[in-house]
Image (tube, rainbow, N blue to C red):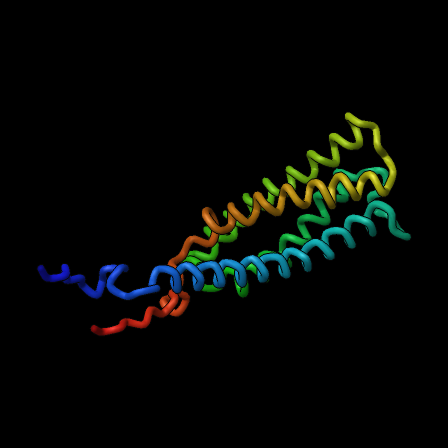
Length: 177
């Protein structure tokens, strides 16, 4: 009895090929998450800095108006993260239509901002916490964690939907018998 023949396109034809693809895919996802985290960290610094300057800073242009301060700070941070994610994190998944991507990015960020603003609103107006620390914990810790998870999945599946470049695929070494 002879062993069944397998074509080179068959994943079982190359011993270990599926495992190498899986490891390479996980490595690529981890790198993407690290880039996303770095860009998000930069956006976080911009967001918190602008929020606190507007709400509690020396000039405090929006003192007593935490919702307006949060909307302004997220808007500034959004520009920073748009550039970082488009040009670096998801650079190989960009679509050819910048306008569509930007509109999608803005819509997703409005959703993420709404999550942070809702957390701030609940903290302030439902729970009655009005200190600068409470504002920052509700908007910039709880709201940030929930908004970040939402943004990553929405960017990945709704905004940056272009085809990945072939070099992103893990090379599979074909072995001949």
